[in-house]
Length: 497
Length: 142
Image (cartoon, rainbow over all chains, first blue to last red; front, side, top):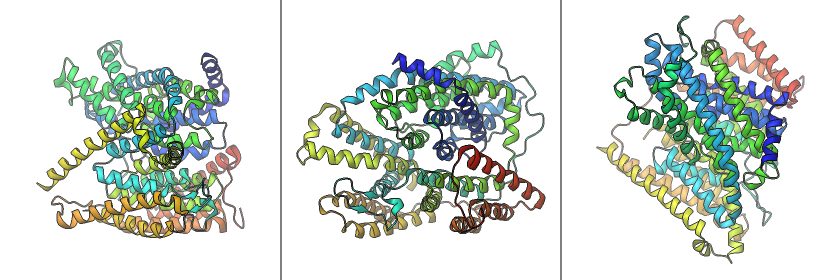
């Protein structure tokens, strides 16, 4: 491990990787700051670009975009009360109050430091936990991997949708679509409709670009939006945090970093849940809870440290077990797969240099994010002035070229378009797209492991119920579905009264 | 239930029918897997539609500020753009598509339109074709 770590550190400091980390961080902050664009979209649009790069450089760039975009949302949340991403909604509550009082710089400074600390803390946890968990994953046989895939699917279905049934519909649709392609055992071609481009299965990247980016571009154009107005001297005070502010928020930042990392590791929970949790815990433990909502500096630090701490945490189950922690890491997983990197123990042995380079690069991304946040906040705020009627056509063009770039096949662009329309209708019907993305990734894995399990268990799945890890996973599946079922029934009753 | 939600469920039901009929051409030993998935999806969709029939939501609300004609126009224009990619090529198709779409979406300043699009095309060409070497759809001209 130490050799790989040293090699990873050495790799990260190559000129090329440093360049892509810086570019990725800047792009990430801009994407995060622009209301309507999300971290998931940023990573999805950049995956095809990284395809032609060296895997280390490509993954460093994706990691930097992920970190930068989660932080970027706080800039517009604080200055305009328009959170760039859903993860920054809680930041806006106190951040904007501070801006109204003339302390925009103070809020931005503490949000930058809190985000950086949260990101660095989670990167350390990723570096310490992931290799150990990857070794444990070696104990997983086909039945364990089958139930792990089902668990990953159920957890994201139950958390990402407002209703269990809606989540299940999206999940089963994704699973059915994932059957597309050649049957590896019988050689049958399934659901390919005469298209050679579908023989290898439903192309993942075009599908997720459609679901995440194209659909979002359509959401942006559906209304007549006015240009965001930003007053010239919105940041009047200094951005660099004072020692007093750092001392006041120190415990909050540490607590939120731990919360964010743990939430990140739990599959399905994302940055928005972490930031709300970080905010509520900051308020609960504060000496001045009455200041919250009126411009509390702890109210900015709490959610920001928590949402950035999710970044490293969410990569733990993704890199080790192939179960993404949230929708961004699900898309990130697509970035790994296009480079032929399969999550699991091999990622820490055979492809260890690439993996350790990615993990170490998160440290640099967070440091770059801190530097750009403290120095360039005034510049980034100018970017959000780009009107959506310019932005949307550009996103559509980038989605088209991105989906074509991987296989140079126009069918991929058509698939991207179809998933874009589907994603838009889903968005309007309040159906989450994350279960489809995850089902497209985990569906083939579940099918393959089911067939392997049936082969090794003599044609029946029931012997798997005697294996300890399977029992734990089955109990977790039942638990997550039951909790979500009870919540859905309660919500249905409430909506009818 | 919102119109979009109903539309989505109908799309899924049609999808189930079409895909289910296809499964009969699969190997008999493994057609059960997709059939089970499609059957569950079908049941869930019908269940959801039935709930809406028997217990319609009282607090249903619509987003009144959405202009669907814009969405439909953009979808149609994007489809034409995609279909033209292999005929006229990526760069030429983009030079036409992007300004038309921006103009339709409210950018009426022609100079600004030209400037933005020239800048964007140059960035795309340098970034994708030269720097990253990403192939783009080739047409009759470029």
